[in-house]
Length: 328
Image 1 (tube, one colour):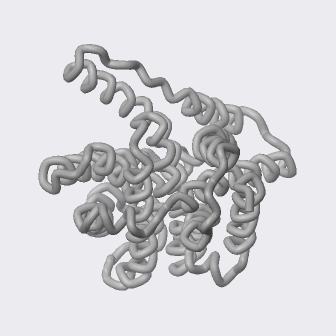
Image 2 (image 1 turned 45 degrees about the vertical axis):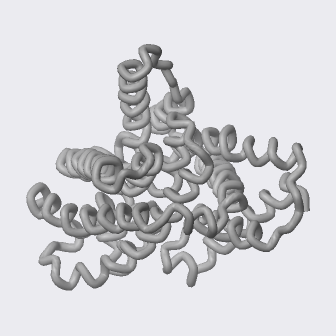
């Protein structure tokens, strides 16, 4: 089946499955499902991709991904930040900085992983899972196998983390609202924040989603800072650092600003959100279609160990940060 037909079918199927209540309760959003469905099809599909297939796949992974992220900004607003207080904002920033710094250092210095694998895995754990990995890809320009490994490990441990929160709550000694902040500041993906929060209470769910969305908003400034840092590093090593400007980040920021200043009609906002979800699901399906288990296996145990360490840091280190900063 040609990919211009296949990938939209996979994306639509992922969106449909994600809307089913049993699957939604498991915290499986359309994005991980699209990756999974793409992987399953890719392993059984023996058809040799044509040049048209390859061009469409690249289009999905690059242009549609960036368009989806820009449109995602319309679902966020500055009011959400003010609703949970400055402590949650600081907490999200500290979480991102700590996880990314620790992950890249451990991955590169201790495990001797390729720089791109360490950065992508750390970004996915620190901010918003697979979407953050693919957004960062535009700055790094990594090999496809590095992206595949990072996404696989992030999806695996993000799912494991999500199912850990109901157990942690029994021993956390936090109020429902404070535990919602803890979930939002440490869980990998938005859908996982929804599932974990809903397992506690409605108040926990609402707080978890808001704090998680604030963390997602930080993807934009993070990518700008990362791009600047990589430019300086490349310049020091080669003497000719190339400035990489991820323009879609400015679109994301502009979309958030528009939604903060203008009351977008609900029907139009729903269309924008659906278009964003479908675009991102197409990008994930394209990634999954090119993912092979042999690629992950060849990467060895080190990427998995890195993702495991970051998972433990999010659960336990995030708990300590929350107990220190959040008093509700």
